[in-house]
Image (tube, rainbow, N blue to C red):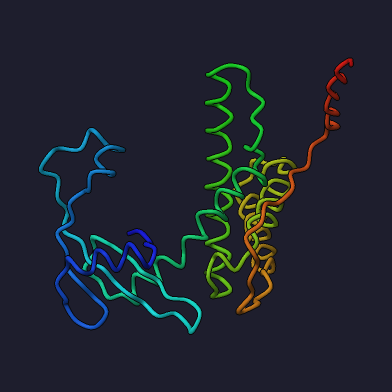
Length: 214
């Protein structure tokens, strides 16, 4: 599923066949510019797709193309969850510190990546279990705070092999994780902007060019 500009959408609609309100069926073929960018495509490449025009609000309309013959409102709901990918990548890069990997060999980088992935899956599992206890969606709980609880109470300070005590500590983590709710602010919106990265090293001043002699 892809989001199109209105201009591209209108040009594709003219070649399609209406299949109901705000939905068209089209056998798509790449144009010469797309073939130039993708020379590996076969000469007879075609794809059956559906076009959807979904009115979200007075100021926002989604023009979608998809291989899925679902309703436009369902596809728009799926498209609206794309921000979860960015959130998950942020959790991996910033919370689990994969933004600047410290390994100096291929083997160490692979181990660092594998360790972070295991930690990410562990924290997500705890978050899902805690969310089920309090009957809310897992993403309503802060990944950062849940990971802090897992790291401190399960990975760093757990000094027993007694199954009963381990289960008691897990129950404590689940209970505390269920309290790590994010603020519910419907309609919250942020402009697209770059977040400044924190660096521990000072910036190198630019060297000024020498003035030409007259």
